[in-house]
Length: 453
Image (cartoon, rainbow, N blue to C red; front, side, top):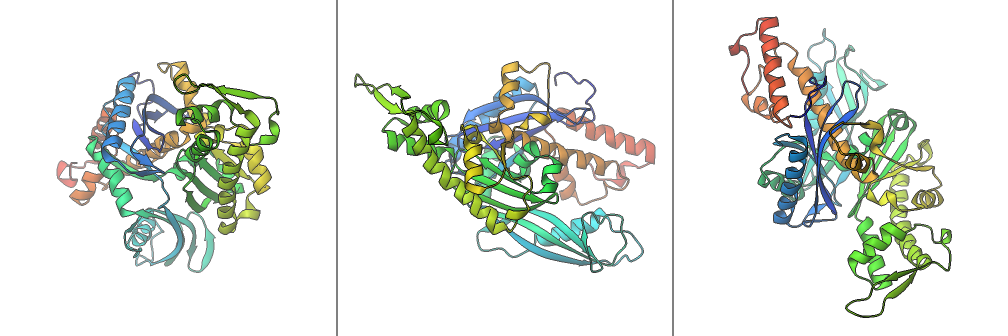
């Protein structure tokens, strides 16, 4: 399992990012200093995904298997359960209000009451072919007293809440699940990718102040808007870095791989920042003459597409109704955020402050991790993968907390079985066994009092 150090309390968890350009698997855990320790990383080319949606199951399964094998070998962890990211143009969000009238008048509002309210939201009737992925509580109202953020422990009869509900196409969700299953893995949690990215690049202060996260990936650009610490709006735009590459390929009449290199090495989102006399020489095909391309002309091609993407982003910000409330401005992340002068272009189009979001503030240095890989992880292109890892660790730690409470094991067999899926390797299974022993010894709970997973 690698070095245990003093992090035995944190389970090992795996994040799986199935992107349009790459499939990335990251194995990690939380250290005693609340940082994320990455134990291993595996990367493979994503040949079966188009604009965030699986288009070829066999190729996607091969990519997942390849990435899992690399991450497993590097971390020395047997990977069985993963936290999977989902994106794509089919993602939609809506606001809904839920009401719960409590029967236990003399008791305080508990997590159980909130869970019941959330479960009711999952029963909403959606359009044909759609299913709910996330139900995110916003403000609560207790006995007509609005603006409550955390109602647990309060007294009240009528519990109301505004919910941000994220839905997606059933077929797209099933295809992702099928790919994971065919690769010999189980899914612990399906997580919307902009939510994952926000965990790795945004601070609580920024979410409180009001901020728009823009994750520019290969096939899609994901948006998540936060205000007063609550997610207010999500959207997925079906354009990304690959759209820019295609424009360069057509505009400069070069091969696709050459277009990608031109974008990453010489690309700029602001044409005016480049000199007139800078020329790039691209090799010709099979003895043909090399092609000369002006850096400024290349920038004009890139700027045209990036302006279009940012206009879409700005439209989503305006339609959310929070344009004037975003004190933190815009944070751009994802592989597309590495494009030179992009933050200046965002500021110019939207009139909002902009910075590039790096996931390095959550990372802990791991002695066994090669420096080159550790430095790579600090790149915005790994923001989603690290965010999936953080989300997975949070879920696993919540499960451990629940297990420490007496009576938690008395539940339906199906639920008990589902809860055991939340592990990323053998260490977590040991933790489950140790926690059960502790509860039996300390609280005199017999084997018959709970259902074994």
